[in-house]
Length: 228
Image 1 (cartoon, helix red, strand yellow):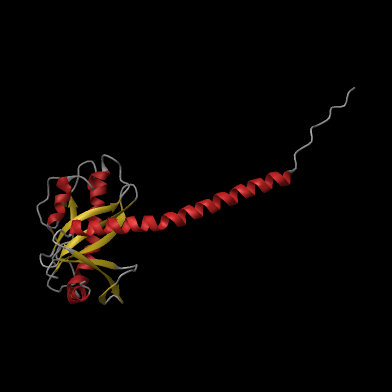
Image 2 (cartoon, rainbow, N blue to C red; image 1 turned 60 degrees about the vertical axis):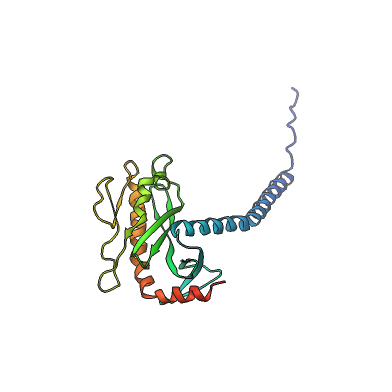
């Protein structure tokens, strides 16, 4: 009987070394790509935010970014994070409104948006969705539906007599049933997404509007000081 010779197994170490090397190379490439694209992404986001500010504050010709310090006052900043607002000024350096970033959960994922607030009119005067993953053709109508976006031309956010609370909380109602200036006409077929916009604006305005009204002078004087 002829003895069968088993083929020799390849050494394990060279294979392991190759796999580890490929893994390390891929990790390095990912880090390099991430570091290389991060400034571009940041610049694109800043440019998109700049455009959005002037969209929700159409009467503004320049903006000044402010940070909320110690929950008590607003100070102009050039770079920063945290609680930031974007004050819009006209050609005569008059404050025309404040753009506020806000966010919350939609149907598919988090929705982030920017809205403009006019202290003089005590209304929200514009809204633009910054990021959204809502269902195409349905939920994404919050970005394109003209009737829905018209809700935010003059959405009532007046304060009560104490100046600390909204007189009426923003609410989203069934499409075609809006009867009050603080209500948002929802979108049929995108109920959850349109209600999410209402909830985001309700929570954000309830927090920010009293603060802005109380420290309006910080924004007005700080904006003049920051004028070019």
